[in-house]
Figure 1 (spheres, rainbow, N blue to C red):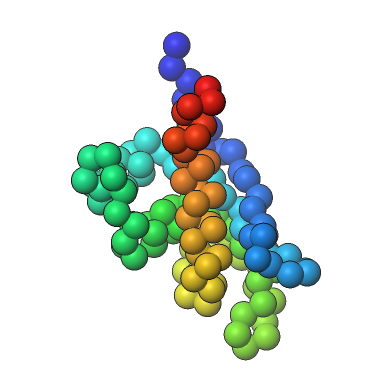
Figure 2: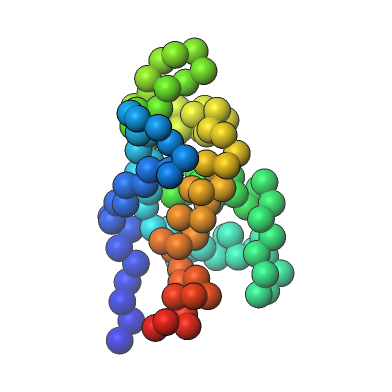
Length: 117
């Protein structure tokens, strides 16, 4: 029996590289059609982690950001797509990588998970 993707599910993520007070990224699983769009950027078995791929991954999965301190000192709490895009431009690259890995984990099994199932 097939089980559908619960696109209403929300997962809170805090980067292990963050300090107090923590910035919370609220993530959602991607729909099947969103995953197909992303698969167009891979060459079959390998995913090329290009800027385009990561931007699409983050854009489609992050639905809210809470307690982010912008470079001008403003604390941002938003679920508006345009504001989320602006915040993403200020996130350190290491944290963007952490977010991309977490989103990948949420949306599919890692090789270790496949071996353990």
